[in-house]
Amino acid sequence: MTNVDVVSRYTRGLLLRGRGCFAQAAEELQELIRQDDTIGLLSRYHYALAHRSLSGEALAAGDFPSAQRHLRAAMSAVGADAGLDGFLAGLYARGHKPAECLRETEKASAKKAGENSPDYHRKLAQAQWQAGRRQEAQLTLSQAFRRFGPVGVLHLQQGLFLAAEDKFAEARKSLARAAEAQCDNPDAYRYLALSAAAMGDAPAAARSFQRALDLRPNDLMLAYQLSLAARAAATAGVKIVVCLPVPSAAPAHGSLHELAKRIADEPDLVEALCSLPENDLDNDLFSLLAGAVELAIEAHPRQADLYLAASRVYARLGQQDAAQGRAAMALEINPAHLRARVHLAGLCASAGRQGAAVGHYEQAVSDGADWPDVHLRASEALSCCGRRDDARRHLQRALELNADYKPAAEALEALAA
Image (cartoon, rainbow, N blue to C red; front, side, top):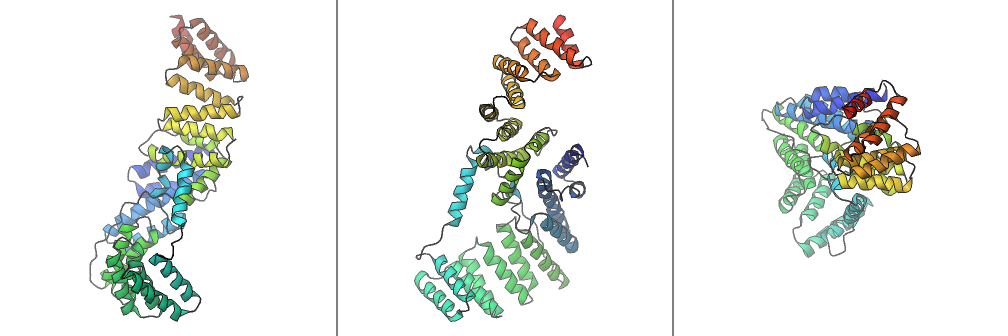
């Protein structure tokens, strides 16, 4: 399959998913998800979203086997905890220092709890349990309860200890207290659902899985467990209405870093994506690309091609100032970068800065961009500046290079009228 065929297939898949034709979108993208490049990475993302949507339709219809099949397909493409729409974190496109935002987020989440935190004691008890010191672990939890009271994370850990000893009834009570004390903790509901399932209470398990999924909508494994519990409840004669919530927009840091690495290896593919026809998913796709390119730039700050790629993405997003700034940086690193020079000329022309555009076009031609389309664009900018003779000269040169270049012939005829 040629690169043009790949981009064309990817575009069709994207448009089909945007129109709600999820089965056709998954079929179009299936051949691309095995590719180990940027298109493959993006295709896996949209392929997983298409199957997630299909699983939601199947769940709503009570077709649990189909829902499970689609969820397994989604997980095979992107993993169980996909952070799907986090892939499209617009934060990185809007913020001018996306890599710094990312580092700060990771740093905040990596902070260790101090000794005055219940979570510290929970982790200590967990480590003691895993080391085989079960009595010590129970003692640590008991001391924490006396010190901090009925805290959700402590009830959660106690419930897990009890479940590990097959004391499911007691575990279920502790996990119910954890969910009550910390009603925004999806893990409490997940383990509460599992304890209910272990006791054969499929309807209660389905309800708890649904609550956990509402809190963690990107978790495909939770969705899969919910479908299993709902199916078991239906077999027992209890109808459970389930639904897949809209995925959240939490940043998928690992995915963004992976995409940044791929773009650093093949920045020209960004240009191919920027040549795709405009569609309703543009903001999603190019916000993602903007963030990834900025991360790639931070890793390779002297790679002019990456600045040009960023400029093209910002131009597609309508962020003209950012686009011009990145193109100018590409030329600062490599003043002889012809594509960057021509691109910046076009940005200047679009912004009404025709004089600046002329300067860049003529510099590009002088540096070696003696190409028919560049001469045509230069003539357009010169005409806007009232320099008709110079515009005519560029059109004549375009036709010398390609006598069949119809746009130049038509422009020359219009100039003579």
